[in-house]
Amino acid sequence: MKKFLLLGLALVPAAMFAADAHGAETDYDIVQRTVNFIIFAGILWYLLADKIKAFFSGRSLSIQAELDKVQETLKASENKIADAEKQLEEAKKLAAEIVEGAKTDIEAIKQKVSNAIDADIANLNKNFDEMTKVELSKAKRAIVSEVLEELLKSENINLTQEELANIVLKKVA
Image 1 (cartoon, helix red, strand yellow):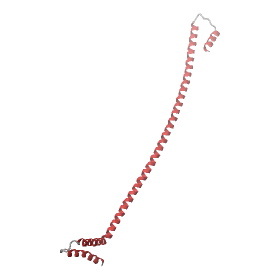
Image 2 (cartoon, rainbow, N blue to C red):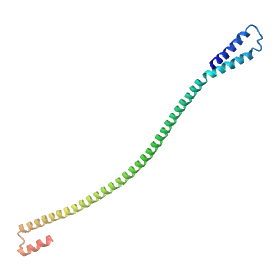
Image 3 (spheres, rainbow, N blue to C red):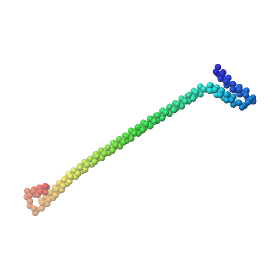
């Protein structure tokens, strides 16, 4: 029933337009055309309103879905940035700790090397003193040996065994 009514309303403006085309007054033609346009627009709205509403509603929903997806991506990016900043701060702290640890290790190694060098120097001095004593002892023996050989080879000196022993004891001491 509604369709017949709509069809009739759609044909009325066409009939009015056709009837007026024979030379009637054209000054008031704008009113008839406006009425025809309003009727035509009403019919189009009645026939297409549900489809247009559905189209724009679907379009709005798809735009909203895209906006939500972009918002989620933005939030995920912000979270990743925040995580990266936290990791950067942790890395900076770790680097500072490593540097401090390295400085401490360097100081400990310097101290160990210094102690080892001091010990080596002390050992070298001790060895030098011992070698000096040994060489001094060797030199004393060589001198005593030379003196004894000279005395024994010399025919001018007549020494008794006791006197010879006293001379040797004096030289050794």
